[in-house]
Each structure stands twice: as C-alpha cells, then as structure tokens.
Image (cartoon, rainbow, N blue to C red; front, side, top):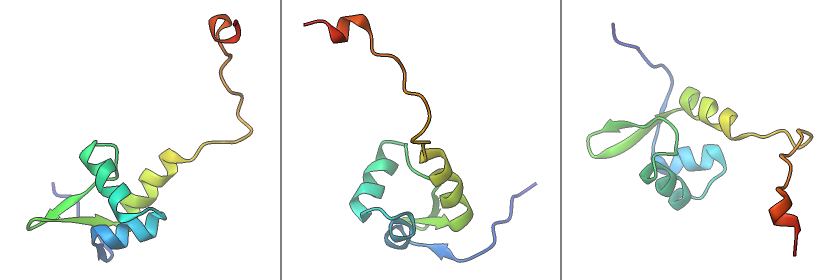
Length: 77
C-alpha cells in the first residue's frame, strides 16, 4: 500500500525557510543523514510540511530538563 502525502511540495530552499535554517545548513544535515525525510522530484529534493514538523519536534529540547552529571574526571584539574 502506498502512503499518499497531501499538501504543497517544498523545495530545499522553502523547507529551510520553513524550519528556520539556512539553506546550506539543511543541505549539510541531509548529506549527514540527520535531516528531515526528503523525497526526490527528478534530481531535486522535495519535502512535505508534515515531515518537517515531525523532524523539528525531534530537535526540540526542554530547557528545564535535568542535564547529565559531569564526570569526576572532567571536574578535576
């Protein structure tokens, strides 16, 4: 069964704007395979807003969340 996507298709430039990133930053993340789900439209990347929203949600951290303890080795001089 094929999953049908709805909504406008965004180019890399528009996807970067949507995410609040520089276009080159998004390209770098895609190259490192750390970016959002990208489809191909010919030789170009194509993105859907739902995929971008899902990816952005994974990048958000809670500033009030406890941070891991520093190791004793890191605190000694």
